Length: 125
Image (cartoon, helix red, strand yellow):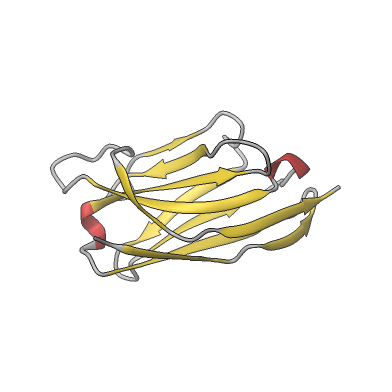
C-alpha cells in the first residue's frame, strides 16, 4: 500500500495562494488516481478534487472549481494542489489520498484506501 506525506500548509491571508504537495512512496505511483480532501473543524471530510493516474483527467468540487488546480509528476511520485484566491472558508486540514486504478482506466476517481496525515491550511480574513 502506498504511503503519503503532505506538506505546504500554513497561514495565508484571504486572496492569497498556497501550494500543497503530497509525496508517495511504497507503491507504483502511476497506478493510482490521487485525490485531495479537506476537513474543517466540526465538519465532515469533503472532497476537493482528484486527478487520474496520467494527469489527463481531473475533477473538482464546485466550491473550489476555478480556484484550485491539481497536478501530478509521476517521475517525482508527487501530486500537487495549487490553491489560489483563498477564502476563510477554505480553512481546514487537507488530506491527500490514493486510489488504485491501474492504467487501463484514466478516470479521476476510485476507492481511496490510502491517506496521508494531513496538513493544516488557515486562511485569515
